[in-house]
Image (cartoon, rainbow, N blue to C red; front, top):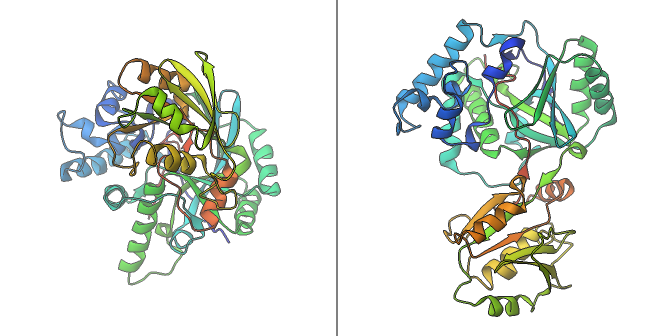
Length: 414
């Protein structure tokens, strides 16, 4: 059963929240962070991407960069830009995009749930990326940024969301990207107790986004437990910062592909080869969006095509085989184009659906890419089935938006 706890969040005073909070560390590079933080000494980038405080080109893994993170985190607290709550609380965090709002609980998630597989993952992680974030958690002795979880819907928790969000929020603002972010602080002891009890009835939590952050946070917690001869199990380091959303609130966005060449084929030969496994329809110059599972959109030579996988080319009883990312990777990218490793092949690139299919068209029309393939998005049910069956999704399958804003609530490990 999922174990969560309230905690004494460290967060910005209301009038400073928009100056402090930032995008997550892994959605932008050092130069973009430098630009976004320009002229703003209160930006969280000074803690999560502290290389911006050094000359351009400074390696983000340089020991002095980690030292700077510690110094800046301390400075933010001393200056009152980040202040710790006086008692353990939960928080509700809402994100609004395109008129749709999703509500999640900000909680301390139990390290043992991760280590023992009750917090389920659907992606592989890279040890070098884990190690970087582990260092960041270790040096600050805090989870500065949350991970993004989903959980099976629970009626009582849904009722708590309705009750709490009927009151005035602590923070409510629109970020520069146009997405809304709202946070409520839960002070009521009875509600706090109820949240803990309801999560205990939930068998598993699912990592939606932030696999490296989850691994790093849990591994540092486990490491602290091992290194503490007085370890009892109730220490703050046994928990890490997460925002957990009911799965029905979440919508996965498509994650599309662009490819540099047709592996020596002409446009006509390529289309001919597709016809073996797909019903191919020419849709002309108007952008065509895939409309159901196993339907794809191809952009090639200034035209859009609908590709529908023929029966027998996919296995709806296999949690991985049912995925359109598997169908397209096997039948188009591998069999026709000779692309076998999506992680390392330089002939392919990936475009998050948040950018729209117009971005696919742009990259092909510019001559940078030869063709684009748009996929129907994965569902939350598919993600949960894969995690439950112990499988790993193929690379570049899911795209969640909006991303969690970093700095709304921070969790200290002591």
